[in-house]
Length: 212
Image 1: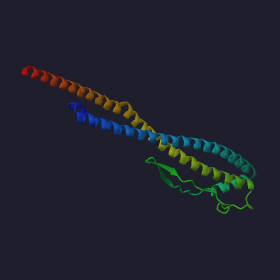
Image 2: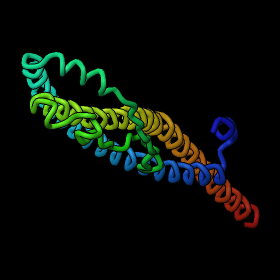
Image 3: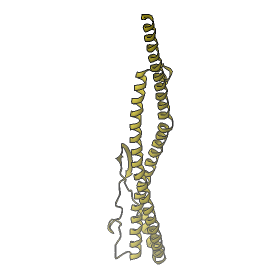
Image 4: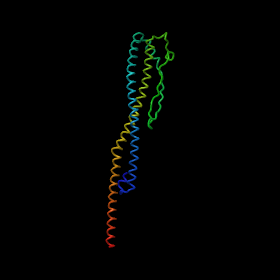
């Protein structure tokens, strides 16, 4: 672009810049479409995350109330189960392609266990302790879901910001600069054409005058 601006205006330069302007314009529309699709995805995840957080808040409040009741009835059993309930949880992260952007997300996991898996017995444990354990495991599943959504939000948000900067640069700097150069070359070429027509007419008049 800098070389073209420094060189003398030519019709080839004029046509090349017009083609460049058209190509950049098409690229701009694609970039806008991509950003629009990502924003739709972004706000969809925001709505889902808000709903899941509200659900988690209610679930944890209910689980906490159950925990307090269970502690009041049999605190030793609750503490014993809590120490024995520790386990390792594996999470799988995959990438989903959205308009050429690979968005990481955590696969949903099933953390709720059977009584056998929790090493609990409906005979040996109170219903309150069992219910509380199940509520907290369900809350853990929900926490993983929320984490996955928020990871996606962060990744998509970064791409949207990057694309917005590109769109602004193209719209406010690059395209106006090229269009101004195109208009300038067009004026120069038109002026040259008028001068050439004037020169040809003048030469014709001189030849006619010399012939007479």
